Length: 194
Image (cartoon, rainbow, N blue to C red; front, side, top):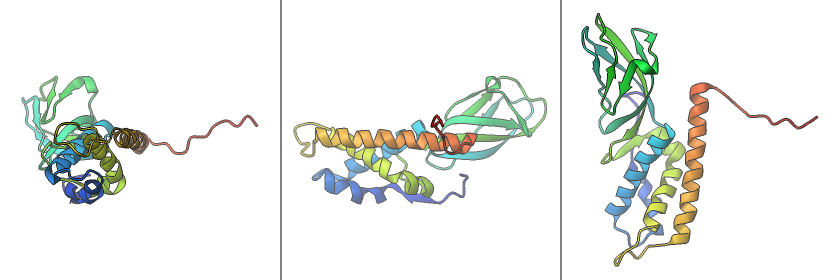
């Protein structure tokens, strides 16, 4: 995904959440969606992007301009003028990459990375909402139903456990799909012994 990725508002998931946790305030439910969406993207690598940044001669820090409300999670690959760098050649952080050497000439860095929404982001890529929106809903419901307190009327330990299990299954499926997308792979065949 790149900067031109179509984004969808995460509050579009609330109609699937709020009826199950009445009288939970809308703002509290949306906060749970935001938190779970960030955790989901961080844990699964479902949001990936390719970025290009200029690197000036003598500069070992590459400032990474991510789309608004987006934070880098991991750098999958880094190329400097088309030459792939070893992971030991750089140190990534959420907003920049520090090279362990100083380039002697201007270059272009091509960054293949995974990302997550910032904590207060209101949108996610439409592709993630379509493919994994149900998983995010389960995570938000698990979080909300596990809450307790004097004014928390929607606590449901059994429901929280069920939704947490479905969320974890969805995360595992997303990790598998992302791994296969990046590294190839198809159907796994078991030896039937014939």
